[in-house]
Length: 100
Image (cartoon, rainbow, N blue to C red; front, side, top):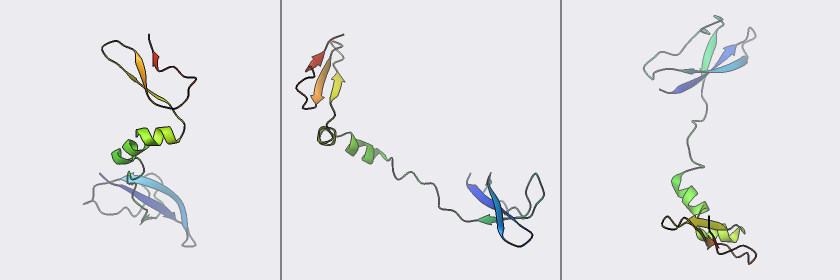
């Protein structure tokens, strides 16, 4: 169900405190605050869409080229031996593999 944003209508007609309310799309907009009875109106706000952390962005940020370009090192576990092997990184001071 969508979340709607409402604001209180002050006596001078300006907007007051805002709050969110989860309602069905088929429900009529509220005209009074559910707890205080103060007049309210629904306001339009930008929807909260997950555009920053999509799977594609995550894959791009964790790509070998991007990790290496930012100076990080990545180790991946070998499930047969349990050792971790360096797959990305240029630091010569770090070992190529880590054994448990």
